[in-house]
Amino acid sequence: MGVLKSVNELFEYLFYILYIILFYISLKRCFYRDGYGKVRLFFLSLITNPLFVFCGSAFFSTIIVFTRAKSDLGVQAFGNLNLATDQFYGSLIVLITSILSIVLIMPISYLMGKFLKAYNKSMVMFVYIMFSVIIALVDSGNRGSQLPQAAGWLMQISYDISHIVGVITVCLLYLLIMQALSKLSDRRRHMNWKLFLIAPTIFIIVYSILDYYTDSFCSSDANVVVKILSYVICLLFIWAFYVIINNIKATDDAIKAKDEVKTLSVEVMEALAHTIDAKDEYTRGHSVRVAKYSKMLADRLGLSSDECENVYYMALLHDIGKIGVPNEIINSTSRLTDHEYAVIKTHPGVGYDILAEIKSRPDLSIGARWHHERFDGKGYPDGKKGEEIPFFARIIAVADSYDAMTSNRSYRKYLSQDKVRSEIENNAGTQFDPDVAKCMLEIIDQDIDYTLHE
Ligand SMILES: [Fe+2]
Image (cartoon, rainbow, N blue to C red; front, side, top):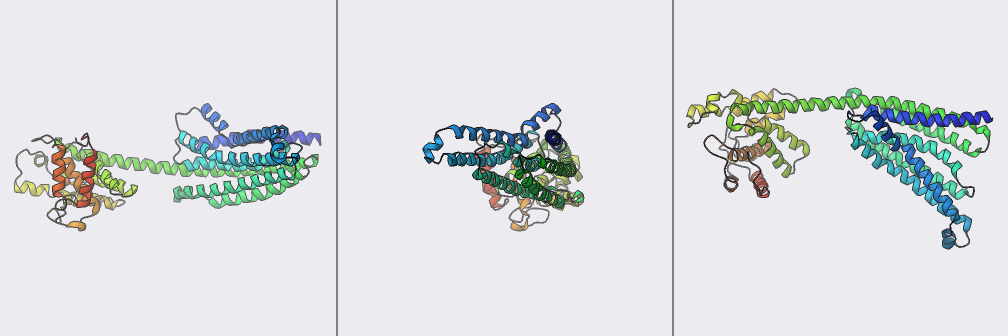
């Protein structure tokens, strides 16, 4: 039986080594970004490991329990009930440190996620929490042996309570993170969440039963086989978890690919905007500035972040129709003839036709078509009036005019802030939507140093 006990101890050590390696691999495979050395990441994962947090808390609670047992404080507080006081303090401390150690996992995992620049901090939290479930379960059995001899039923109850609180907390966090992750998961590589639910449920039930028997016969060598069996189950659980981690990595890659496509789209849109602006040497940067001002307005008008982003892209491409206007007309320094003016006025329609081709983002064409409409209905190309003009186009119209006044032209320098302000104020309700104009005036008033110009 002595051999079996040694095997049990060896198995325990092997388990912890394997646990640390798997934890490191999980972090590395899911969240590792270039720029962090592997050794550095390994030590980071080592010191922030749930295993160490739990061991730390177990260590401190044991020390405090022993110190308390020898101090007079307990006697002062509870008179003659000496044994009960030791137990009471000990139990309380064990309970508090156990809960604290679970709570500590949250900021640690959050900071790690931030440090590793994870796409989603929930994923890092997820890894930490899953590994802390394993440790909480393994640890609960082991900590019993560290109890002082005086520990009785009260201490046992406090262990049980901390165990239950731990499992409930972890399950709640687990559900929260599941929700966050399921929103992210890519449909084509849908994660099998049922696997997550089945594996821990079976594990918790089987392990708790085995744990109960090993605790009940703790002094006997007869429990060694049961103990080894429980570790085998633990390892199986870790293995299942590792398979799932790989699944998450696939989703992580899908999200990364999605992000890359998004970045590419934005860059293509910006390149297009620069192409249009380059046609006219005096409107360089116009589209990007209009996009920036439109986003500022949308944000101030209380639109959602998605809507603000939409306005930005619409504004970025609002003048794309100018691609169809000859350079001579755009760069003409003399007064435009009626014909030339008529050609210029075609750019909203041309832009609309171009952008309507982008089937995945049909809304992009709104800004192009209606940014020259006026609130009083005297604009072009459709002569829409008031709220008939799409709201986003009314925002872009104000931003467009603001940038036209605050940038240099071949025939003049940008206008003074007072002049721009009064232009917008005077044209609110006629040329501009009064609400949007009011918002623009607020932005101007806050721009004390007049930084918002070309
Ligand atoms: Fe325009």
